[in-house]
Amino acid sequence: TLRLKGDYLAIATLGVSEIIRILIINGGDLTNGAAGILGIPAFTNWQMVYFFVVITTILTINFLRSPIGRATLSVREDEIAESVGVNTTKIKVIAFVFGAMTASIAGSLQAGFIGSVVPKDYTFINSINVLIIVVFGGLGSMTGTIVAAIVLGILNMVLQNVASIRMII
Image 1 (cartoon, one colour):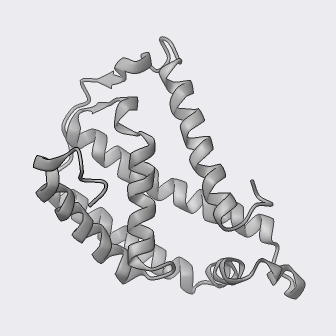
Image 2 (image 1 turned 120 degrees about the vertical axis):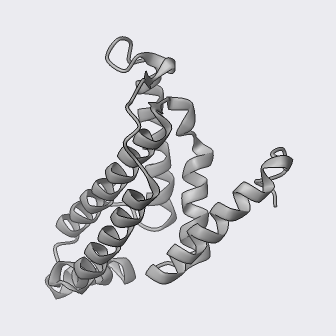
């Protein structure tokens, strides 16, 4: 997938996430299958979520202002950045690792809030929701992404009564 770019990279990422979800469902005793992991102690509160959102935002902004972050932005804009000495493979791996770290923090907070980790909570629709937030917020805009996440989160809560057409709206 490191050679893919644009829409093809997004499609491959969604495919890999679906494969991992199916592997977890069929994981047997290791993952407890479709039943998931239950009985996680509730340790997450809104103050902790706010703290981690602020810390993650600060770390992301500082990462983007660092030399590696600038290289990441150049690869995002044009993958021919290799012609000026940017190792695109290394930069893509660093970006994926940074994204995985932030996703693991969010997943841990969610597990601590809900008290369980079940594969049905991480379907294709959830991945589409994240892509919608990124596109509505603007590719490359931190402020826009945060505003889009808040607005779409509130919109999802308001439209819970019409769940059958919520995604269409």
